[in-house]
Image 1 (spheres, rainbow over the protein chains, first blue to last red):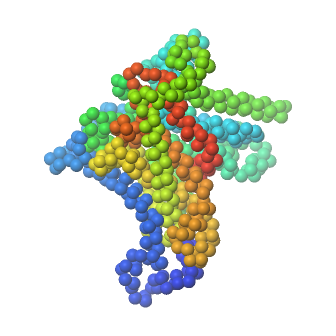
Image 2: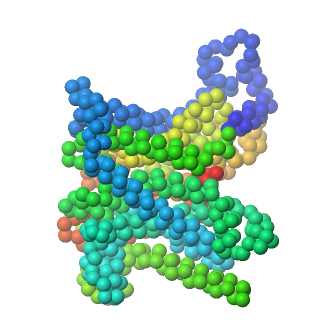
Length: 337
Length: 278
């Protein structure tokens, strides 16, 4: 970053007239206006380019966050500008943290993460390894596995809920099981055993594995062929040994990024849960991840925005802590110093 | 012996890949099969891989059903996806260029303030953003559906990284010729960095077309439904027509599959270049 800025400054000095605009130390202070504009009006230009974006981001990310923290201290039903009388201090936080449904939603997220992160990691890495070594039809296989990325969770949920895992006889899964003489299963409404997890996890696995396969393929391309040659000279057999000692360690940076992305995306899960599990009667009491819980709390019938905001703040804190812990753990940012 | 093993391994790998590819394609096949079948064929107790007859009239039927406003929803989705894509690319590329190339004392602070929002997922911002948009009176409006989503830190980050790698000599030559920052950006940088614009544009377009939570929360009136919200609502309808739902779902992803297959090269480059892993 600093290197780039320095280089830019060096380059600008060659431009005629640039010198005059650069403030020389000790030759009298330039006016406030001149200082605000910066040398060559660069400050002005900087804000002309970055300003619209930065203001929008501030308005639609930072302002709502601050407002939400404020709302979280009020009993704000159906209102976004509560009066002083509705101030409830930390009550919203207390009721959130003692609410079994909220804690249950965190548990749902954890369980979902335990399923989806290793499954997606393993499948996308396996796909990348197999596709990478192909000598023919590589582009075809890559396209096939990547194509589901274009599908929305809503469409995928329609296919999973009403065709593959339809609980009636014509559902594909029940049909196939029927060929082996198995009974029909009501995949989404059976809670014991919780078959709905199979439906939820496979949707996301299908939809996102190709995306992470692309990341792994890029990582594989970056590994120097010389490493493999050296390993072969040292007697490492192709296959498991090479993977264990060369490929896998070389993919460390990609793996860290993939795991971080998988966890944060699992945390944001909403679309497939909502579309798979809710029906004309509403959403069942089980399998509510944080976002589904917040949706029904803050935007449900009683629009409890104060309570919903408190929940959002708690989630933000959890994410902040988790991110720092993960970054420390994986040693992110170390090389930048 | 060893060679035979490798050859067997290679053959096994191809077999596994073909099996997986078929598995990955089954959902698309089901979408088309159910979308073009009669209701009777879909719900028949004995499974048929191909329906008795393809019922193309499903395609017109889906646009005539008042409980599933497909025409309006497709129009809304198109408007939203196009304006989101254009807006995001313009705003993020300008900001990315400013951050990469215009020396400013506090550029780092601004950059980290932008990057920091990547750590704040939608799970946290959607309630507060809803609060803001509803107090602006933007519920069920195009601006409410589009404007809050235009400021993508991710897109800004990709543009900045890409512009940092752009040969500086070209720009310096332009500066010597007397071009200011704006004209350098518009005449030199943009025409020479089209692939990154294509990559970010396609990724944003797909994301906007497939977005669900925000359109669900903001597009409350039926006139403001996107394709995804319309499909989702129809899924929970009382007496559901499966063939109609599936043909609607197929129609909703058809434009995207075309865009995806045509521009896949750019999407792959964009995903790879997102730079998250280095």
